[in-house]
Every structure is written in structure tokens, then in C-alpha cells.
Length: 235
Image (cartoon, rainbow, N blue to C red):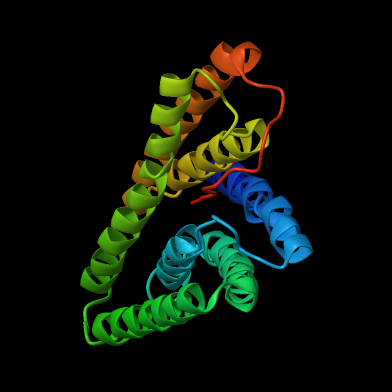
């Protein structure tokens, strides 16, 4: 009886961490909305880059595939969060294409097709691996590589904050959402004993703490006329 009770508590804690990660991730998914309100209002993408949304879509698709029962049947909450994230990123990309200039429009469509092509190759390639453990390991390494590259992208913003001594381009809500989501999935990965989840999210947690520390250190030195961030990324 005691082992079953312990297992039940363990499962509840694991699922709670995963659900919390899904909720905190929503803050990252909606963070580009002010930027797209400006794009729609002005009818132009101005100097904004569409690359973060392309990278984010590819990341979500890879992590989504890792969370499917065909790859890892015990990671349903990884599947849900990345499914929602993929939808958000796809909508952002479509909006960007609609309001972008012709050269940007063609480039974004090309990149979107490339992402879908790469994802199709990953699906086809991984399904050719008969052994389920090897298949999970293969997709898991792709997931870690994708997440680490996404978590590394804020390093540019961190460098900018230190150089300018301003948090103008590092919104508090974005940094806090990154930290909370990464921490939740770090705990989820540890409780699920999944190295492909807790390692990249552990890195994300460290970067989130770094961003929050810099925010509180430099917030009083920042200019009052804050702008929307030019680069918006999430994991």
C-alpha cells in the first residue's frame, strides 16, 4: 500500500510540474502580440525580424514529435505545450508574411517551407529506426540541440543589456515566463527521469535567473521610453 501511495504522489507532482510548465509557456506564446499589434497597426513589419518565429516553429515541431507516443509515450505534457506553441508560431509567421515587403515575404515563405521539409525528414528518418530506445535517443538529441540553441538566443540580449546598461529590450514578463517555464519542465524532466527534458531546461533555468538578475540590477538605469523587443524568443 505504501509504495502505491508514494507512486501516486510522485505522479501527481510530475504532472503538476508539467501542467505548470504549460501554463507558464503561455506567457511566452503571447509575448509577441504587442509586436504584431504594432505591425498590423502600421501595416508593415518595419525593422522587425521574422527569424525568431521560424526558429521557434522548428523547435516546437521537433519537441512536439519527441512528445508523441511514437517516440516517448510518457511525455504527453511535452506534446501539448509544443502543439500549442507551434500553432502560435505558425499564426505569427502568416501575419508576418502578410504585412512584410515582397523580398521579406518571399524569404519567409521559403524558410517556412524549409522548416516543414526538415520536420518531414526528421519524422521519416526517425520512423525508419525500428528499435524504440534508439529512436527515442535519436529524436531526444535533436530536441536537446534545438532547445539549447533556442535558450542560447537570449545571450545576445544579455550582452546588449550589459553593454547599454539598459533592460529596454529585455521585458520582465518575458524573462520571468522563461524562468518559470524552464524551472517547471526541469522539475518535470527530473521526476520523469528524462535527460532530454531536464538538461536543456536546466540550462534555460540558469539563463532565466541571469536575465532576471540583470533586469533588477539595471532596471533603474533604463530609459523610460521602452520599446517592443526586436527579438522575441521562447523554448
